[in-house]
Length: 148
Image 1 (cartoon, helix red, strand yellow):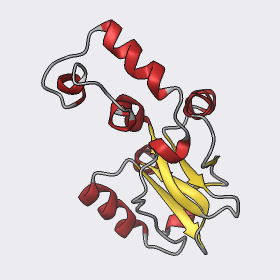
Image 2 (spheres, rainbow, N blue to C red):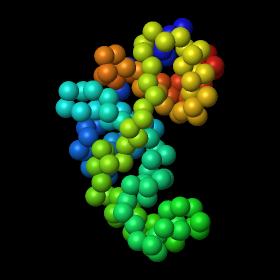
Image 3 (cartoon, rainbow, N blue to C red):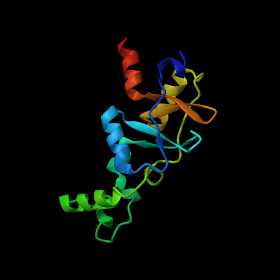
């Protein structure tokens, strides 16, 4: 089996300048855990995952009052979380995305893809042809394969 045999084709993508709240709404509405971020030519430039929303404070300018929360020294209060998310709502996909995307080609052997996901602790891997996303493989896809 190859990546193309397991991938979900035609992945939902977002543009670099899409506001982060719109990205969140899209991911929630489509029930997806990650979206590739593409430029105007459709080239892969980054990825946003569900995990990026829990760590959204990493992208937000913060005061020294919030530094202990952002760096994990203490839990956030509800007011602090509201402040962080209010600031985050002004971000775009470009500002929140992870730029170092691990991707595979459609002809990559599935065993190699799964090994890559395990080794790098990845939950989602875009399948790319010529720099453009053509599919997505998620851990859930691997689980479905095992259940067959």
